[in-house]
Amino acid sequence: MILTTYKKIVYSLVFIGIVVMVTIPDVVIDLSTEFFHLVFELIFEMADVIFESVETMLDHLVEHLFHTGLHDTQVIVFYILASTLAYPVYRLARIVLRLLFLLLKTIPIKYAHYKTQWILLRQDVFYYWQKLPFLIKLKWVLIATSALYLASFLIM
Image (cartoon, rainbow, N blue to C red; front, side):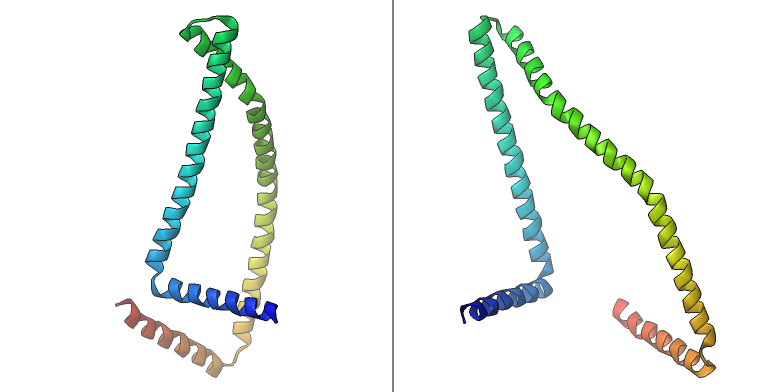
């Protein structure tokens, strides 16, 4: 009983969502783009704050341990951060290159498969069209012409 109540709630919320999407799509699209913009802005802002806090912590640690000046501390911290980030960037580049080469290897195979399927489908359609009697061909041409004529009123 409880599950059917939840199903009704979910179905009614989906129905309300569909009605809202149909009636005011510009507002829904604007709200969703603003929401995604907010999420990405918060993620990048948090990443910046975390990076700045780590950099400040390293600045104070290096300055305290080695008794260096501002410029020397910044150079040391830069090389610490660069060496820390070099390995993950290297691994990511290897993964991306592997995926790229896999993609470049599979694209021609998929293209040839889809091209073959398209040619076979096109041959089947033309064969089917050639087999049709003249009156049915005329009916299809009239239906298509009438549909295009009626659709022209919607465009104007």
